[in-house]
Image (tube, rainbow, N blue to C red; front, side, top):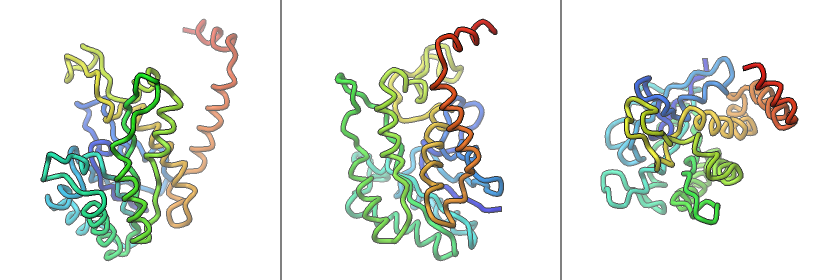
Length: 255
């Protein structure tokens, strides 16, 4: 089996059943991988590159990762928290330095590192367009780090931002943790302003975008994604987009 170790934050973590429908990208991504790929999800809520390292979580990966494995590195949401010295990193200095530490862990064990920029937040302005992103300086830092450390990069921030803006304000709510009062037992009052954390639908959508870019990378990365899954999803999209009003009406008669 080929093994992906995933280091990240709450947008990637594997949520237990009592926190459904919140779902991390790494939690959903195995729906898009080749049959011989397994994911070890080390992502934890609230972590930045700094706190992940300081708490010994990168050391744990170092102890477990082996030659030929992969290390997916996806941070920024919590590195941006300037008021929290335990998590904040400067995008021009310490963030890049920390990314280098993750790369060293992988390469010292003969594993393959991969940078993934953070998924975009769903923050629309009154004009219907996404507001300027807090992620931007960290995305730029990822590109600098990718060049400095010679690591492949997937820009999920770019693809997710484009998709969120194209899909629109109201339709994208169902992909994020927008919860009506009484809808979920552990959130009795609901959530109306969580534009960061993902529902299952969101984790699946952004996993799909990630897989579409992953499969374009040269080996040994590209074959981690399953081309048959992506091809089938493309056929499903074509089928849905070409439905007529009559098709929809006929389907509704079945229920």
